[in-house]
Every structure is written in structure tokens, then in C-alpha cells.
Image (cartoon, rainbow, N blue to C red; front, side, top):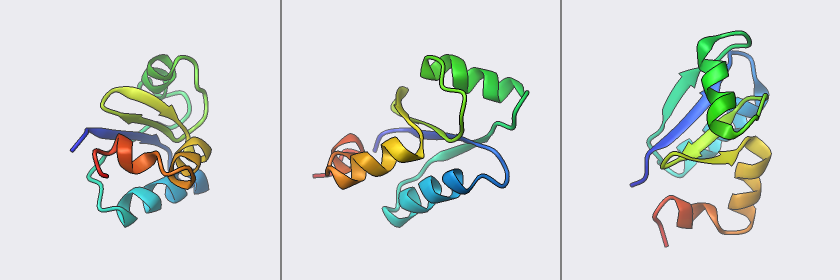
Length: 86
């Protein structure tokens, strides 16, 4: 199973939506609290190549984007493949 990391901040509805999708697929993930102005948020921005919003989601170290991108991967049937499922 690939390593999934998600940078979030409290009260973010997009973060909740992304987490809900991952949980519905029984995907273990590491949630990293990254409120605005934190070192964690700066790390997420650097790792993602400039993404300033949350969530920022990484699968095996590769930036996949935020909630919208995660949902699009699911809609296109590509998320399971990234998660090592067929």
C-alpha cells in the first residue's frame, strides 16, 4: 500500500471531503495539521510545487493536488490505481 499524506487545517470542508473519500476506501493516511503560517503549511507548499491551499495530498511522495484533483482521480477511475488497487 502506498504512503498517503494529507496536509489539512481545522475547519476546512475540502479537507473533510478528501479525508472522507480516503476513509471510505479504507486507505491508511497520515494527516498533517498545516494551518496558515505554520512550518507544516510551508512544507506542503514547497513539496507541492507551490500549492497554497489545503488539503495538499501526496501519494508515495508525489503531489496529486487538493480535494478537487483527488475527486477527479476517483471519478476517472485512476485513484485506485495510484493506491495500488486494481
